[in-house]
Length: 176
Image 1: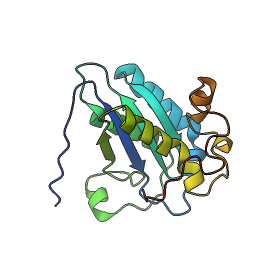
Image 2: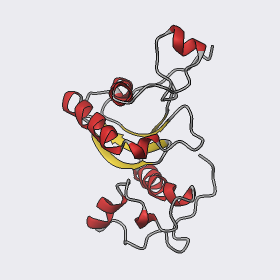
Image 3: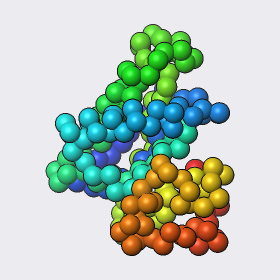
Image 4: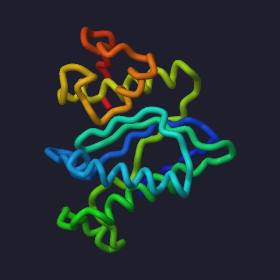
């Protein structure tokens, strides 16, 4: 088994990638976007945090969170968001033997990617990555055409022009 350890910094800002187990041709998150929103809402009521930027893709999501001062527990929050969503989705997904033994659902990958944001440039780069993701994956030609993104809030706040990403303003060749 992998010896996987996370580190925790009180009140920090984090970039996350969360994936469904079955990603190919899976649109579960978009088909249940209201349920996913409800899961975030319910967890934020009990364990506050700020969503600084987010994009929901058909089979994964990326976001930036800032935890309250003194708080380090993003893992519990993710567990509760995933659990809330899973409890309200019908069964029928493929479940591995190890998940079956643990009585786990098979919707989400167990682990998630977490990156500690170190400075404003790091924050800005990850925010750009989040908002560019639908174009990167070929879901839309223009970033503004993707409705499941905080990009639109950033436009309203004057941070991005509505045309951001139209003509190579942001080009990320790196993989996920």
